[in-house]
Image 1: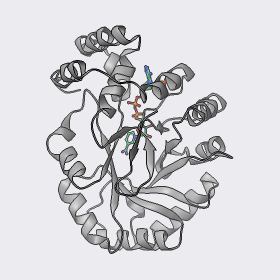
Image 2: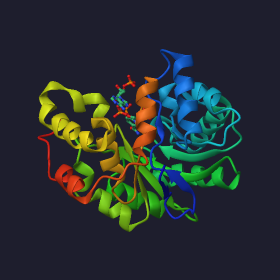
Image 3: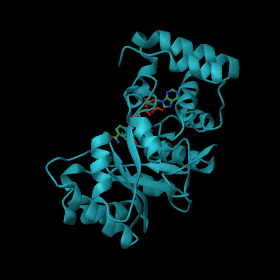
Image 4: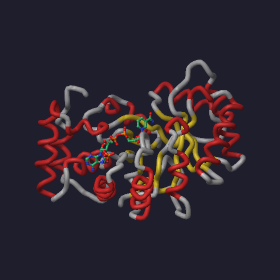
Amino acid sequence: MKFKELGRTGEKLPVIGIGTWKLGSERQKEIDGIRYSISNDAAFVDTAEMYGTEELVGEAIKGSKTFVATKVSPHNFHKDDVIKACNSSLMRLGVKQIDLYQLHWPNKSIPIAETMAAMEQLVEEGKIRYIGVSNFDVKELEEAQEALKSNDIVSNQIEYSILVRSPENGLSKYMADNHITLIAYSPLARGAIFAKRYAPISAMLSEIGEKYGISASQVALAWLVSKPNVVAIPKASNPEHAKQNVESGSINLSEEDLAKIDSFLPDGP
Ligand SMILES: NC(=O)c1ccc[n+]([C@@H]2O[C@H](COP(=O)([O-])OP(=O)(O)OC[C@H]3O[C@@H](n4cnc5c(N)ncnc54)[C@H](OP(=O)(O)O)[C@@H]3O)[C@@H](O)[C@H]2O)c1
């Protein structure tokens, strides 16, 4: 597994973490999958109060040393609500401290300064270690950073995959230049890579994968995390998928293959 620094924190994150949105239908199998990933160096799990998976994550990480990221929902961005939401997440996760606490989406109706004051209070109280955001554009990142007095925004979790290349239009460069880690969500385009309409993309990924003895999904993930500053959080309820995803964090694709994938721009999902 390769690791990348989270922001400028000195903290090393595995390039492949664990997504948990929509888990819960096969609880024990999913907990086993998370535990498998954790014990194979992908000890970085992402959840959110909105997902309803914090308790499942709490059970899966019990007794392990795992980097835990969760998110506060936009309707809870008033100061007291952020504090309450964090306390509830801590309870559900069964941990004393959240490693990365993220604003799930921007919320224009609540001043960012008020929300960030609550986030800094949580850092001071030791309830969270790092402040991150999700689904923020460049302007929103600038405003969020300005609203902080003594902390940095260390990450922005955004959609990025071979099918969703919009971060390449300036946002990922801004983030790299400002030491904000890009946590790529839906890195397998929610499975759409294998949809019929994207057959040429999956064919290209499979053809590249054959050379290395790896799957098309592994090529897609290895390509994504080859980008400086990018880590990815695929979700897998199938244990074989979880195994493949963890392995992706150690794969090196050749410059030629990376360039081939780079130039294969889709027409959008
Ligand atoms: N911040 C946000 O607003 C936001 C929004 C969306 C998602 N997220 C986060 O990002 C995580 C991942 O995104 P996502 O769940 O939307 O989609 P994703 O990870 O891109 O795709 C998940 C789909 O891909 C399949 N899959 C996983 N590994 C595979 C493999 N090796 N080979 C073939 N298929 C594979 C899964 O199947 P199985 O389940 O059957 O294994 C599932 O159907 C979420 O769980 C969540 O934590 C954040």
